Length: 338
Image 1: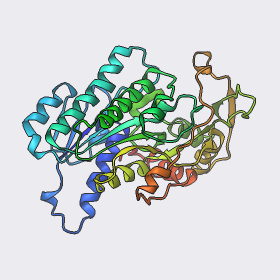
Image 2: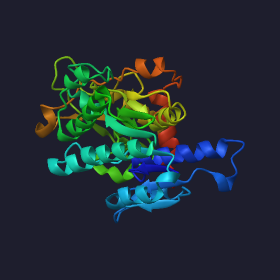
Image 3: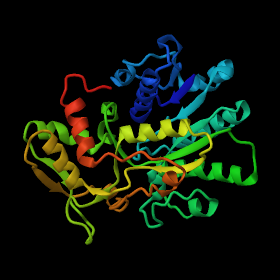
């Protein structure tokens, strides 16, 4: 049994898809003997349920009852993949963020330690802050302590990363296999429920489809042109591949970046969306909102050296290929859900 917290969310639901695909492709896997999938999430009254509507699920568990569920089914849990979090960088209730992003992560780590269950969790590139300290995913105490997140979400992720490495350094008991993933700017299907926090690809696509102009932020930094702000945009399938590889390699433990390894501009992204829609790019530039201007990142790029040194050989999907797959295979169809 694989338990995926945040399993109805964007990355979590894609991981469920990946787990199901993997079992389907295994020649010796009988349909009735596939790994059972459990989602831990809140579905609310919106369309989030559609993200998991095509999956074969064993159960759907409310986060408030997760630990009780795990205690009742402990001997059947093969791994916990913890993607659940308050991920909105605009959330202002820091007590709520700490409870959801730090304490639950810590409780799941301790449960996995006690029951000797593998634990893979979502950290974030937001832990790097403005990038002044670089984007090297060194997971020693000193390196993590140098990072300065720009918002409470990023800080809560760093808080847990630092708790984990201190625990490891002390020689405390730990899960038999563990990994944290610092996700960069992920895009792909099943993010419609995220609203303004959805990827720029999904926000531009409806405009590109009708030949309307999209709007990107002007640059307020002398070193970057308008639309020239750089991000490590990563196709969600590449993230899923990394998670599945880690599940298959219990000897690889640590905190790793999850990105493409190559920074691209927002202008490049917009052009890729218009190209996928068969349109000439139309881009207008608007001032970056003042409430985020001072904390705005102009450059992110994942260093992928450590994971590759550990043996991961997956190739990163190019921005153009990933955007084309997303637009033509999902956003431009009648059924955009995976």
